[in-house]
Length: 342
Image (tube, rainbow, N blue to C red):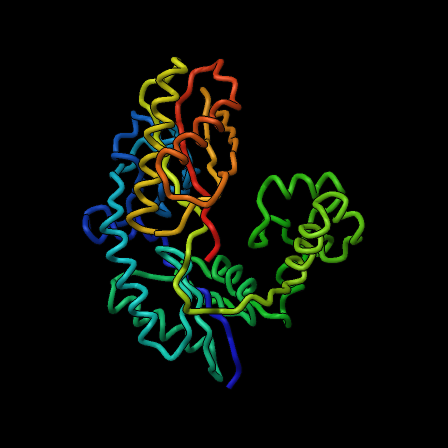
């Protein structure tokens, strides 16, 4: 038997969970976000595959989603219910002889020993469908990076194997953003260097990449293009690196004093979360401001010492806010703390 890594990714998880609760919505476009009212400010948490054919995507403004797909059913986010279903998803994976690493509500890695890992993956799919009535797609790889990319290639409801043996044939002609960890901004920077495919990135000059991305990230992004990843699959509980709160306002905020009050309140809510959930001190506070119409900026301030003290976290948040020019109306505010390492 050989070691393989599986990446299990639930198909349209939140939308699928909602369709289980509302069977009459099966096969119809469903969009989940905010309080379910697309005329209000808010963003799409997830969209069913039927809605995605209209160009609706996660993170899109609900009002934009309504324009693109007016016939969709909009539903409010029910985080507690999704967490409960997620726990059942993970319990299903834990019934198999594997190391399971939870990677989010709707995804996990599995390290398995199997002669036929694709058959093992099909067994996982069947068990998931029987226990949760939900479909998943599974990527099979020889490391986490390849398994993660393979699960995208498997969607929906499929199993796909991506290893060193077929990496170049599958990936060389794809754009760099097909790599796990490479976003649109990085792709644009690569295109400016004349690098338009994964294959070109894998063969790119080391100095060119380190000059553009820095000595660490430059080499890292080239390793991604070669499918290299040594990170282990571990069943250690996930420890978040940060905690934060955000608030979208239905009416724009223009008064700097009101903006300060809202940031102070968000900072204290985050401090309360730390004391009740994480029990790890904060080392830095970051404030996010989204100006009208959708221009987003952040500023951060380090704390004098690691702390969970609400007064210190509030003071740091207000200091970070002081770095902004509040000369435009504000539609969203956020406060986040970065946590001390274990």
